[in-house]
Length: 336
Image (cartoon, rainbow, N blue to C red; front, side, top):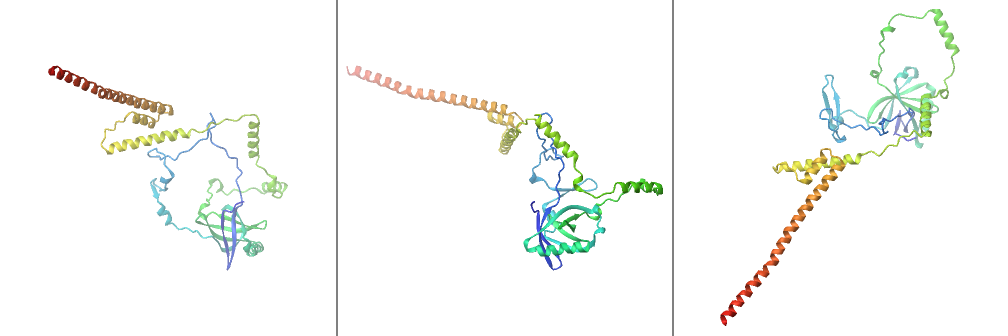
């Protein structure tokens, strides 16, 4: 077991260092909600009821719904102003007779284990509780909220059991039981005889959870029979890619709007917009290929222009050479 809390029991002028352990555990059969078709786990998203958008944890606050349906939002500063206790002390208020604590008030149960340095005062408190046949009514702060609890002894170990507040126990109001109806003497005698015939001691191991055992056996049978559903990997990666493209497109649109642009997109922008609007990965890939083709075509056109320009420059020296030859020939003729 792992300790979930560490503190001390305040017993008069004596402090008993203790560690708190959960005394119970839940063995209920746990089922998962899955898609019947392929066995995929069902996921839940935190979606705002007003705008329908998914809300990250960082934007979630505590809200209190008023009687008229209006919502009061409580900030972190509001929560800090509430009375809380973070002390590591189990303070004994009084010792009360055990029969005065209605079992209906019991909430959660914990074992108290003493530190080595507090073993002697722990044993003293335990023996005093057993001898007095009383429970110690205490206040304790677990998870920053103060609550009432009692200390009692079970199998030589002090047990702390938290209590419900008085207003958390409902008052039974059944009209059918308000009538003055009582069993006859003969009926009561027969009932008493039945009680005597079924009397016995409580043995916890005598009873078992047959439902849990039946579910375990059913699952084992299906596994042995090969009735297993192969669940493919969740396709969360593609969703992240689409979300990223959509975010990029929104960024581009926002930047263009800030510069006073018309908002039209080029080939690559169109591809991004298509993907951001919910295109599949294949469509996005095709759009990227289209953009690459357009880029290649542009590069080819540029290459042709560069080649033509180079050819013109190379042709220029030939024209100059011809002109010089004609001038030289004319000069020779004149000299003759």
